Image (tube, rainbow, N blue to C red; front, side, top):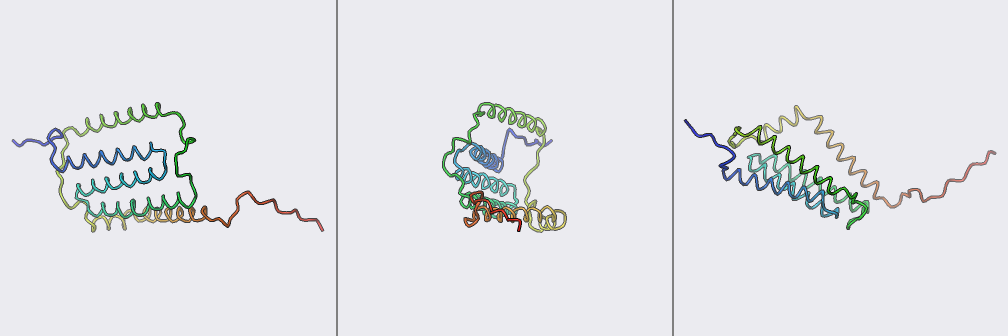
Length: 188
């Protein structure tokens, strides 16, 4: 009879995965709790980086590099360009605080507690050893370009629309509402 591994005796890979997960969750909390927009974007980079590390531990190297290139390299840079080009307030902003911090914290902790309890109860005896090959480029490429091609293209169009929107909002030669009304035409 062989001993069944459990969450009470984690391996080195599982410990690294848990530490990276804690970094991802902690930085994600800092993304939504910081009052400075640029700092929130930088904490988002940390969260995405920790998530890429989790993919590497799970032997999905291709997915990890896609995470770094697409999310860290493109989405966060697009977000930062959007902040800079639209001249959004970068420093602390008092009007962003709704005063519901206590209620939000209680709801967040209750939701996290319920989720953790459900996951632990559901997967108490489940164990899946980490085996390489789950994130190989060949299988993922076939899946993306056969099964998921429409959502993939829709996402690329959405990102292009966001980039064009940021450029349009940043143009200074377009006046918004400051112009006097056009003179009325005389009925000649």
